[in-house]
Structures are given as structure tokens and as C-alpha cells.
Length: 88
Image (tube, rainbow, N blue to C red; front, side):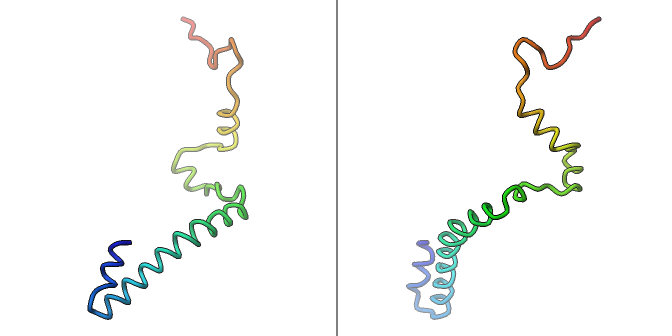
């Protein structure tokens, strides 16, 4: 922001306009977009915020995201290992 202030004190009118426009854009982005619009859109879209397209899921080698998240959410039962021990 200090850079915009220093440019706006220049003697060149074009540079003053540029600095004022850039400073106003940063303020609008910080206050309105990031503080109001983004949380509002996240609240409106709900679970659609975390939707992953199938080609991207294949690229990331995720076979069944629902089964993966359900398995990760359940801890193993106490006293039972997750996999059977190797017998040899």
C-alpha cells in the first residue's frame, strides 16, 4: 500500500491515476470480495464447493472418493489390526 501512496504523490498525472486505481482495487478486493463475497458463495454452494470432476479424480488416482473418506473417518476397532498378519 505504501507503494501506491508513493506513486500517487508523483508529479505525473497518469501515474497518480494508476496508483489510485490500483489502491482502490486492492481495498475493494480485500474488503468486499474476500470478506463478504467468498464466504457468502461458500455458504450458498455448500457441498458443491468440494466437488471434484471425474477426469481430475482419475488423474489423482482416486478410485471412489466416498468410500475413501468413509474408510478414513472410521478408526480401527481397539485390539484389532487393520490388516491380517502375514503367515508364512
